[in-house]
Length: 127
Image 1: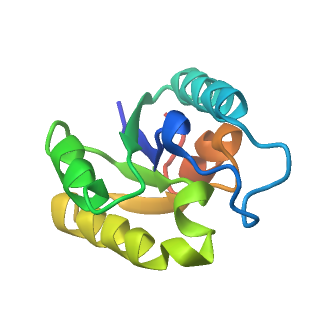
Image 2: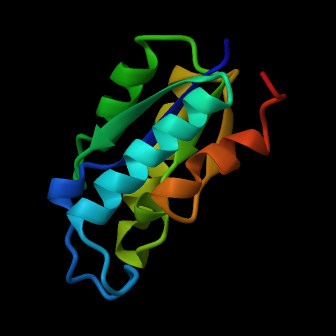
């Protein structure tokens, strides 16, 4: 059974005042989207989990530790990690951590938490 992880900011640690984020986004919406994504992954026959990261220098290490815990077929990196321009170096750290810790995994990108299963499906065969 393919295993997929969604890497994204811990919803309680997101700076919602950042104008790069969609208007009206909040921790509750992100959490609901993550739960929906994990359900959709399960419905597709995949094992799915969430790797919450902090928007700081610990993100890369957190990702590496998480990826060392299982063999992942796909890593979905959330839009909140890759979109805000001020977070470019953090995004690079996350991508490089995935590359080091799970070199065989495909990497996918979502546009919002609830389309994470669709992002993984672009790279994984049906279960």
